[in-house]
Every structure is written in structure tokens, then in C-alpha cells.
Image (tube, rainbow, N blue to C red; front, side, top):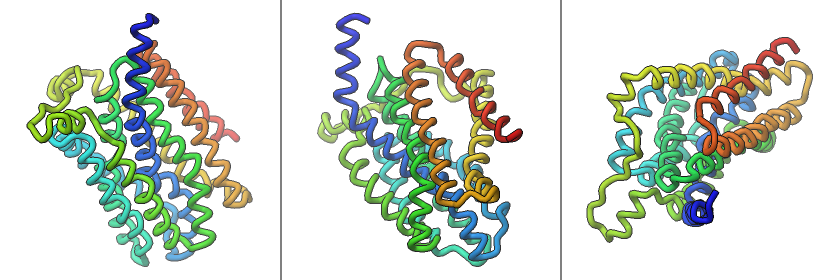
Length: 313
């Protein structure tokens, strides 16, 4: 690596670290409801008599909202930029998370509440944060995205323990209110003051004059839809996320059924997040140096091996 390249990399991170930090924090917060659900299953079963299948079917609601919402979010990103979409999404997500404290006793109220949370989640989800980061980085975009994506791993590592702490002290309803307050406290100031994508910076520099949106290099949407690569990536993501989410959501109840205390089970679940943080950092580093298909394919084998070990344990 030449001195000029090193200088460019340092300059990118010096200017762009606030965006990375905010994206990482945003991915922690917007996964509050996902990685804490494993702790809420038993309290909700006891409170309303709902079955585990009924409770975890909320993940299907999440999938439906995502399928309908992510294309719309893409349009909004092109029109308004990451910063505005993220702010709007978080203003919806945080109170919706707190409102989960009011669900019950009918199961449909749980599904409706979870749907509302996921509207906010989609509006301020991974697409929004990574779009903002990608717009600010070029030479070390892979590493910048890898660092940002550690937010999901941090959420996996901390949310089961945090949620269990809140449930034990305030009940499941108070825990959801607490999570909503914590989410708002963490992400709203950070997004307002730190999360500036290339569009918002250009608009600020132009002092109100119209600025053309940043457009990443690559193919258009119609061109992408006509390629086999797009559909391969889509199906790979679908099956991988389904497998991982199913394991994460049921992890604490699975351990509890084996006689492990819920507090201990939540702490063990946090180890998944720690390994995820390491994996995202390593993969981000490698993507800047090795073709992404080899990195993605190799890392996708690891959860498959883990699920096999769980099956035969």
C-alpha cells in the first residue's frame, strides 16, 4: 500500500467515523425487539396463555412488513437521503417499542404491535444505515461497513441480559417501556448530530441549494432484477436469515427447558453476539482484499455447522 493510499484511508476514517459510530448504534437499537424476544417468550406465555408458536409468529409479521416496506424505503432513500429516513424511522420505532407494553390479552394485539415496531425498524434498518456509510467511504468501504454491522452483534450480545434484567425488576410490560426509553435516549441525539450522509453534507455546504443525490456505482434496479446474481443473493439471504433468526429467538427457551436458569441462558445467548462482532470485523477487512463471494460463502458455512452441532448435541 502506497503512502498516498494510506493517507486516503486515514482521511476517510477521520472524516467518516461519526457516521460509522451512529450506524453501529442504530443497528444496536433497531434490533432491540429482535434479540430481546427470546427473553419475553416465557413471561408472555405466563401472562396470557399464548403458545410459543403464537408468540414467535411475530417474526412472520416482521417478514411481511419487510417484504412490503424495504422497496419503499429504497425509494425514500433515493429521494430524501439516509439521514432524513433514519430520523423519521427512529421517531416511529422508539414509541412503538414502548407500546408493546400494552398488548394483550388477545394475540392479534401482539401481532399488530409487532407490525408497528417493524415499520419503524424497516424505516431505520440496515439498509438506511449502510447506505449512509457507503456514501461516505470508497477505499475502505468494506471495513467501514463491517464496523457498522457490529451493531447487530453487540445487540445480540447485550439484549438478552438487558431485557432479562428489566423483566425481573419491572415485569415484561415495564421492560418494553424501558427498552423504548433507552432506544430513544441512545439513538435520537446521535442520529441528529452525527449521522450525515453525502447528500446532507452537500446540502449543508450548498446552503439550501438543490443538490443531486449521491448514486453508488453499479447497475440499475431493472438491470439487477434481470441478473441471476441478484436472485442468488436474495435466496441465500432468505435462508440464512431464517435459520439464524429461528435459532436466536428460541435459544433462551431451549436452554431453560434443559434446566438452565433464564439469567444464565441470557448470558450464554450473548456469546452469539460476541462471535458475530468478530465475524463482521474480519469479513469487512477481508472484503476490501478478497472477492466478496469467497468471503460470504466461507462465513455462511459456519452457522450451518453450528446448527448441525446443536441438532446432535
